[in-house]
Length: 271
Image 1 (cartoon, one colour):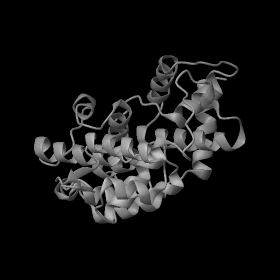
Image 2: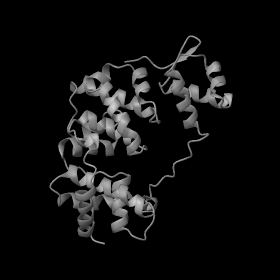
Image 3: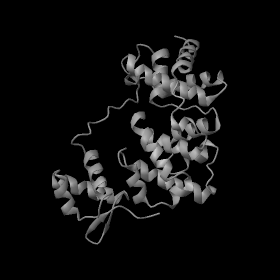
Image 4: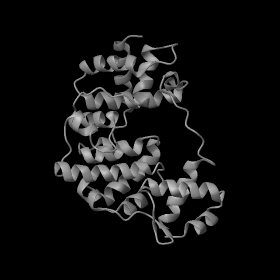
């Protein structure tokens, strides 16, 4: 199929079914867009919506997030998983306040230089906050181009897709609207056909959560949001194998997501 067919199909769908009321689509604030993008990594939209609203209510600006302790940020993050994302967001807020007086830079190179911001997230901030047409690719966008332009092919590299994204951008009045349209159509595709992103060279099958180290890490941090406790007592209360729990406790401490105070394990209090 042609790019023209892709554009027509995608825009027609968006006009009829576009998710314009998503809370992060009703703002041009780069901080709030950053929060949404970090939350949406590996997490379904339906789970993100209530957590995004709650997080923004508690930390409405990059300055309030900067002033918060990491412990408070982790408490607010509970329910989303992948808690390292919360730390990355907290560290990024510090950098924006200290290096840019609380104002996010408006170039891709300066954004990716901030801690916790990768090339996609930087491009998303430019597109959704400033309508700057920087080429970006994520799962749903990738799915649309695989579906329309690489039918029957597998192991397709993003290097092949990105030039097509750039060409499609050139014909659009708004990068913001175009990317929102692509994301919505990519999400729709997954409900009507076999997930096209499985044909990407970069497709990764997510490991099962039950019984994984991720489950143990999440349980440890969830427990620490309620109380400080000795590692030994915590391992006993969580009912995982003790050696696995102790290994993850040590890793969380090394990553700065937990810390020891005397005999007790606690959430980090750093600001």
